[in-house]
Length: 122
Image (cartoon, rainbow, N blue to C red; front, side):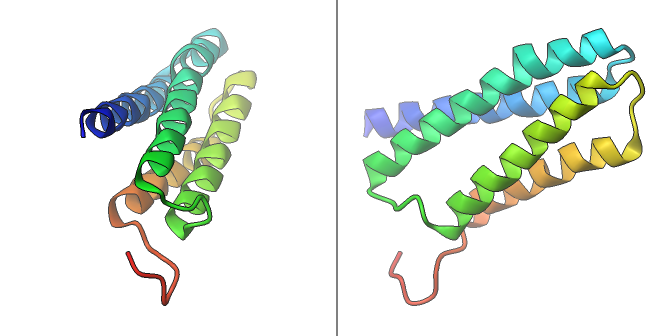
C-alpha cells in the first residue's frame, strides 16, 4: 500500500511540474524563458508522470490499452509537442497556447473520470 501511495505522489508531482511548466511557458515573454520552462520543468514533469503512471499500471494490473490511459498518453504528447513548438517561436499565439493547454485539461479529465471499455469489469 505504501508503494502505491508513493507512486501516486510521484505522479501528482509530475502533473504539477508539467502544469507549472505549461503555465510558465505561456506567460513567459521571451523565447529563452519559454524554452527553459518547457525543457527544464514541463518535460521532466511529463517523464515523471508517464513513469509513475506506468508503474501504477503494473501495481494495479491495469492494461495500458484502457481508453483513459491511451487518451492521456496521446493528449499529453500533443500538449508537449505544442509546448515545444511554442518555445521555438519568438511570438506566442493563441492557437499555440490552446494546442498546449486544452489537451492538458482533457488529460486531467481522463485521469479523474477514467472511462473504460464497455463490458470490461472495473
